[in-house]
Length: 517
Image (cartoon, rainbow, N blue to C red; front, side, top):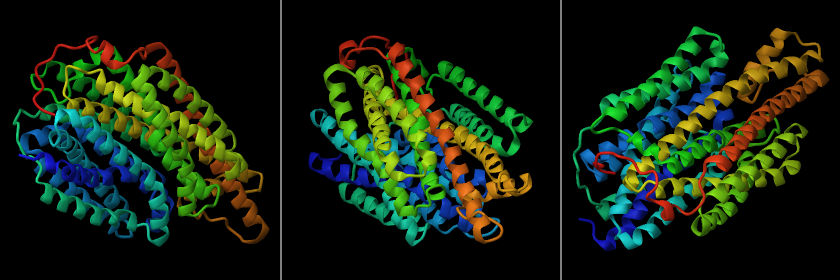
């Protein structure tokens, strides 16, 4: 049994453990151009490095929570840390040659599985290590620090990439060792609450998410009208529907989907889903834009993204106060409006290729999203009185990560397709053929596209490439603006007023007693 004095040690251990996974959501995006250049990866391959992790995390999160209940949370979080660290080391050890792409994507997926085992068990251990009256403070520290680590990713990734891109993965090893040492010192509870695991549901949700994302992300290679694209998206969607039907009938479901009968909870999760279509993918697109269109180094690209977090950090505090005083609705609505304006103005300046012209709007975009994320996530948890904290957190994390994965797949495919068109149009004015333009477009993600001959023409071609990528990224950010406009309108209509605790009895659902966190 964990003593009260051990609580801070458990909290520290879990912060080190889970901190790796939060950093990994953003740190890799900065290194993408260097990784692609060194390993000669395909255009879709570099996106799978980011999305393989997100997809594995979203598809495995609920199952990871159930495994923690059954096998013991301490041993599962320990296993998760080890899996994550070993996979990180193997990502850093990726060989060059034809094996490189499947190797790094495979171990990024394994990283995601390790994180899915680790996070729900770590959260449950923090909760169990504190008395009820101190849990809120402990969880605030836990989420505050681990959430802040997301902003460290771009900065750390920038400087580590300039040493060696492999260092962004190797840095996880000493962090994991510290986490394991703290787990050994604190000895958190390892109580088991065995319950049937819904393996059929796990297979359905994993296959459904994987196929839907596969079709959307490979559409740029396969073509939108390809049977492989259509088949993957259609079968994936049908499997997700089958998962929902199965969960409604299951005695011990993996995810209690009846909780979505609480309309406020459902509305908050829709907001989170739409927000995450923008939030995590923006780091990938902003990083590649900074390095390929603006010509920045990896560390400069990290600083470029840091402007976003300046606005985000400030408004997150404001959003929390608004939530405490009057509820999440005002923060979400105002955040959606400000975020839409910020992204639109940011996008409008991208083709100017001037960082200084973009800075105010990057900060404004971050400010808008910061008003939404914490209030929507906290409100969702507060509005689900019939379920355990860990279970509801598992649902919101699944929704968030799947939204990120879908967003990256769809927007990434649009970026690749649009960039080919832009490069062809811009380089045609310089006398290059369609074949030459297409070849340059396919090389662009390496950060070092071939410009043919040297001299003045090479400079003009390179300028055309920069302009093309800026135009393509601008299109993506205009689409992100549209997503935030839809979020704003949705929040106006569906997100209820009032603090969650004042209407906690509304929309509860009929479900069997929860069998653990």
